[in-house]
Image 1 (cartoon, rainbow, N blue to C red):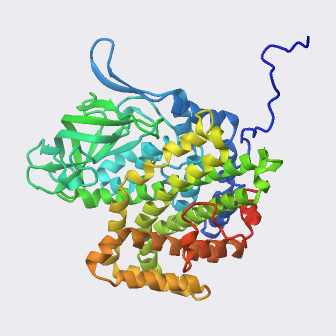
Image 2 (tube, rainbow, N blue to C red):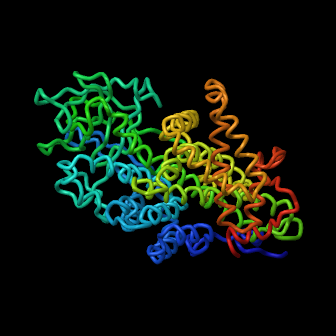
Image 3 (cartoon, helix red, strand yellow):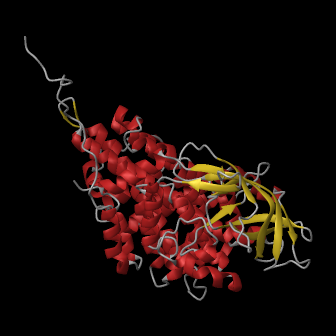
Length: 563
């Protein structure tokens, strides 16, 4: 009788090998080209180094470990003292150390030069393809800097730890640490996106109060991210003003004691599990007013503008990560006698995903440039750049983040059952996808903000549309879509509000189409325009894999991720 070795019932074949040890930056043609044309070529070597370091088996393991071993809240010390300490797996701190080493928390502010914002956004995009949760405190820290810079006395004490490229995980008063992280706390139970309904109160400690004054805060925050940060920017009402004011609330009070911000529990989230989000109570917590009294929302909106851009980048990165994994799998997996990547219908799916991914990439990189250039108010192009920043950013936040949900699900399906289990990255990508649509303003909030921005800055909107009209002259379908959008915007106000999602969608698709027409090969731009904005394209784009057979699917896939 034939004998078999223990457990050897079959030979494992036709399984795709793990995707590792490739360069995230060098393998991304669209990203590399955008870095070059938008003035960040000086950062190319750093991006190449970072792109290689992120895909080593060791770094990939960090992402998996940080999400499997989620943070824990330790409310009390062994002696019964209230400490509200957070315990993370060491992988989490290793990921944050990688981020700070690259300067992604401060680069345009700590090293200002042409292309610095573009360089930072490209690096952020690379890291977001590997692990998303570690980006939350980094994003908030980055976005807090321009707000804090407007408070010279406070910023003088924060500048060095904010700019430092070392991750210091110690839970100590900031004066004893080498680096700092800043979080946010705006949402309350009754409000959600409507922060104007916030109930937290702030009472002046010295009687006078006002900008730069010390306060004690009483109230709560329903979402407080991330509670281990060295300080948070929060909104509260003062006794003298019913409008919301903005406060800098440190983790430790001036006397060195733990500030009276009591963590009630950590949120048990669908995704973003490596990161800690919490509910807190302010029990006479110490805070310092930043910005003018009653102007807290405008003060903190500057922070939200940056975090919204990072939401776009994070979703574009999930698309890119899922796309590369899907292409890799299809090239190594065979069915019915030939590799999946050589089968016409699978090629259609992958090519359609590749179009969506490249469009998202060129869009966020263009926004990065606009954030940099719109700061120069003397520039002749500042009106159009302001429009990209103020109008297109919320539209992109709405559309790209929405598309990531369907995109990651389709890419998971390419993997089949292997994609649905937690032993690979696809399930994590899929669980991560919804957060960027929800955080920093839901879809409806973003679309209404698009309309509000266009009403408040009509000259910027006109400059943007004029530039698009110039681009559309060579593309009749693009010109027709632009005319249709203009007609919708000229309709009654109530109809515009009801159509806000359609308007935001069309703004993004036209923006993406003009960028691809300028910077991508014709076979990419033509396929995108024909299936996203051309008249009668309704049968394409709703579900991935519906490109007309006339387009060169294989060439689109090869451009996305060369074999």
